[in-house]
Length: 154
Ligand SMILES: [Zn+2]
Image 1 (tube, protein in one colour):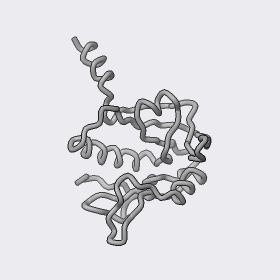
Image 2 (cartoon, helix red, strand yellow; image 1 turned 120 degrees about the vertical axis):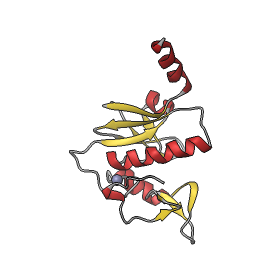
Image 3 (cartoon, helix red, strand yellow; image 1 turned 90 degrees about the vertical axis):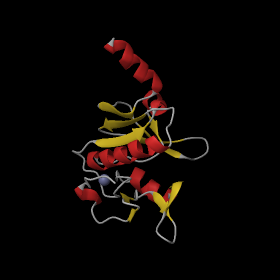
Image 4 (cartoon, helix red, strand yellow; image 1 turned 180 degrees about the vertical axis):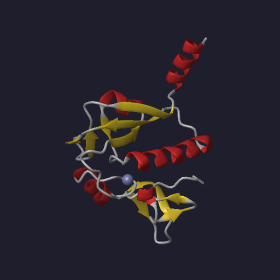
C-alpha cells in the first residue's frame, strides 16, 4: 500500500489498495484486467493531452511525464499516454512494488517532457513520439546502468 495518494487520484476507483489507471480495462466486478488497455480511453488521453492515470487534462505549463524503458529512451516512442508528475510518481511506486514480485530485465524510467506528437505505425497503432527529454529518472535501473554505477563507485 502506498501511503501518499496524490490529490488528483483521490476518489478514483481502486483495487486492492491501488488506484486503477484511467486507461486500464476493468471487469464487471471492478477488478482491473492486467495489461489490458481501453483503446478509446487511450486515444482520448493521447489526443487531448490527458493523464493516463487520472484521466484529467495536463495543463500547457505542466510537464508531461511518460513511463517507459530503454527502448523508449533510444527511440522516443511511448505506447501509453503521458501523466501528471504526481500521478507518474504514484505509478512508479506501483512499478517498484510489482518489480519485487516479478523483476524485469529492462529498466523502467520516468521521462519528463514538454511536448509530444502522435505517430502511427504500419499496424495503425498510435504512439506518442518525443523528440527531447528534459529529465530521465530511472525507477528500476536497467542492468547495464547498474554496472556503470558500480564501476563508478569503485
Ligand atoms: Zn494525473
